[in-house]
Amino acid sequence: HSLATDTVFSETHFISCRNVLIYFNKALQNRAFGLFHESLCHRGFLGLGSKESLDFSHFADKFEPVSKRDRIFRKV
Image 1 (cartoon, helix red, strand yellow):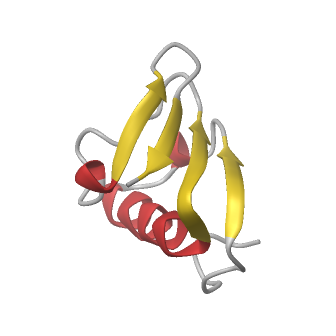
Image 2 (cartoon, rainbow, N blue to C red):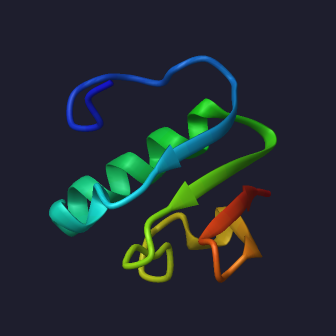
Image 3 (cartoon, rainbow, N blue to C red):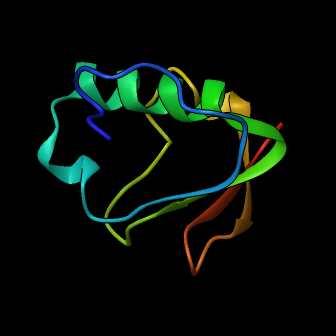
């Protein structure tokens, strides 16, 4: 799946995107977070890499941390 060009995928329960977003600029990161948010089912999970963060994203308020240590978030 190309985060840069593809559209939403089916309602997914868990998306793991570890150590990919660190290579994207902020605009592409926000696009990816939007894609994740649209693609996850209600209360679905998102796994990020240890250096990745939702903190400065337009979607920071759309996810809640489940495990800060493991970088797992839940769609709210």
